[in-house]
Image: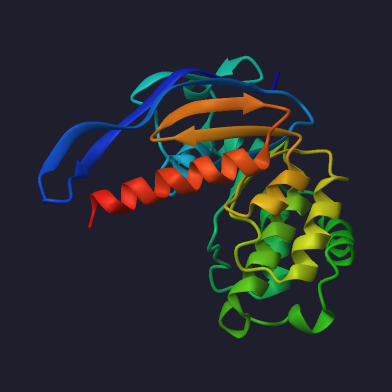
Amino acid sequence: MLIRLEQVSLAAGRVTKKGTPITGFEVLRNISFEVNKGDRIAIVGASGSGKTTLLKLLNRLAEPSAGSIEFEGKRYQDIPVLQLRQQVLYVAQEPKLFGMTVREALSYPLKLRNLKDFDQRVNDGIERMNIPRDWLGRSELELSTGERQWIAIARALICQPAVLLFDEPIANLDANRSEALLKILAQVDSTVLAVTHQFEWAERFGERVLQLQQGQLIRDDHRVNWEDMKRSISQVEAEEAAEWD
C-alpha cells in the first residue's frame, strides 16, 4: 500500500446562490480508500464534486480538517513536505514554467535533487515524449497552453516519483497527444491518479475508478458501466446548475 486515506474531510467556507455565507461547509466528507503500487486510477465526478481538492490533499497543498492520510505507512504530517512532494507529485491543469526555457524547466527538479545523470534523464524524457528540439529554447510565453501542459507532464515523468497526480491532463492536448499519453502512462513505473472529465479517455486509462459526488466518494470499483455513470454525472450537473438559475 502506498497511500491510505481514513475518514478524510475538508471544511471550507461557501456562499449560496443568494449570497449567504455558510461556514464549515465540507468540500470533502469522510473519504476513505487505499492506493496500491501500480494503480491506474481515474477520478471522475460532476464539476465541484471535490476532485481537484482531493489531489491537493494528496500533495499537501491543502490539509484535511478531519481524518488521516498516510504514505508508505507514515502519517503525512510526519513527512517533510518537500520530501513528500518529491514522491507524490502533482501536475496542475494549467502548469507554469516559472520563466524558464523548456530545457531548463525539464532539468530543474532533477538539479534540485543533485542527480548526476539528470542530462541523460532529460534527454530520455524528450525522446519518450517526442518533444520537438526547437521547443527546448522557448520560454513559457512562446508555447501554447497545450504545449505547456505537455512539457509539465514530461517534467513530472522525468522525475519518476512513486505517485503521479494529474488534474485534467488532456484538457488542452490535441487528439494525437492524448492518445500518446495513454501509451506512455501504461509504461511508467509510477502509480498514477488522474482527474478527468473526458470519459472516453478515462475508460481507457483507468483500471480503477473513483467517483465523487458532492464531496463524497460514492464509487471505488474496477468494473464500471460508463454510460450509466456519464448519465448520472450529467444529471447531477444539470440539477446543480438549476439551483443557481
